[in-house]
Amino acid sequence: MEPLVSTLNCIIWSPAPIYLSLGTGLYFSLRTRFHGGGELWRGQERGAGLGLGDFAVGMMAWLNIVAILILQKPALTALVDYEALKKAGKDPVFDPQALGIKHADFWEKRD
Image (cartoon, one colour):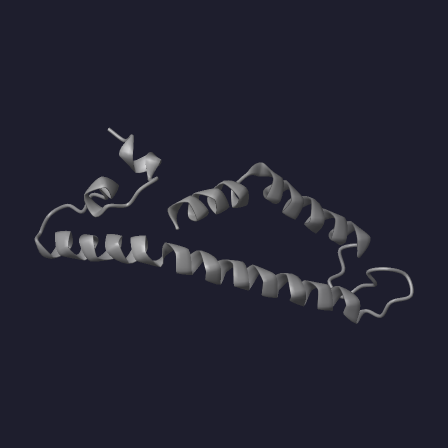
């Protein structure tokens, strides 16, 4: 499971999908002349742009659901640790190694 998550992480957060999303948004904004319900292509009704927007929002929702399912275990582990530290009266500091969370390089390299 870990190699799959690592591979998906590299693909999703690489520059290509980000630039593709920005380029697609700019293209369709220019193509519809910044009208959400305007004609997408000549000869089509106004609902085509809205239908494409609905499809994109639906795909975004599914991507978010998958991300939530992947991140739920480390997030809940960190939440339980945070609540335990607060209850003990300590200053909660996130330590991924103590929680068994891997690939949290940002927090591991902090001084």
